Image (cartoon, rainbow, N blue to C red; front, side, top):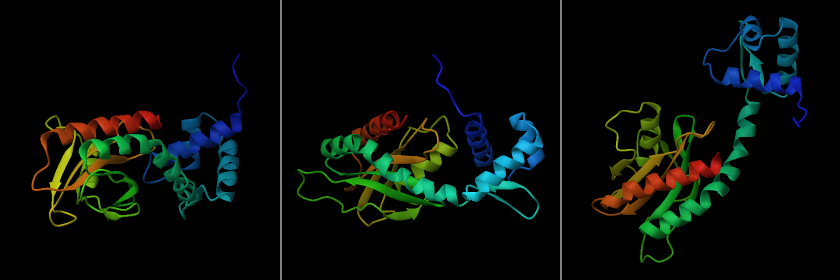
Length: 213
C-alpha cells in the first residue's frame, strides 16, 4: 500500500531543490515550467516559503534560497556528527592520531567532530569548531578535489605543515551523500604520513558516507 503524501509539500520541497541547484535564482515562469504547474500555484508556494524565510525574491523578481535554510542547516551538524562518531573513533584508535569530520561552511572548512586516540603518549590537539580556508590543509583540499575529480587523484589528500608547524594531515572526501559536502581525515605530528594512512582515511570516509545515506 502506498503511503499518502502531500502534493503541496512535495511541490514546495521541489521548489527548494530547484533553487538550491542554481546560483542566479529562477523566475516564476521558469519554476512553473520545471514543476509542470501554472504560475498561480508557484506564486502561492513562493509566498508560503517566503513567510518562513526559506525563499527570497530579489528586485528582479527571481526567487532564491533564503537565509532560513541556513538556520535549518545548522541543526544538521549534530546529526551528521553522531552518525560519524563510530568511524572516527575507529580511525583515531587504529592510526593513533586525531581524527576529524570536516564540512564546508561557505568558503571555509569547519571541523564538526573530533576524536583523539586514547593510547598515544602525545597527539595533535584539534577541536570541533576549528575553521580554515578550503585551500589550506588536507581536509579542505580533499573537499576541493571532489568538486573537480581527476583520473590521477589517489582518492585522498596529504599535506604537511599547512595549518600547524610539524603537523601532517591526510583526508578523503565524503562521496555520494546528497546535501553534505565534507571530508574525513587525521592530523598527526610526523615528518611524513605513513603509507597506509591514506587508504585508511578513505575507508573511514566511505563508512561515514554509508552512515549518512
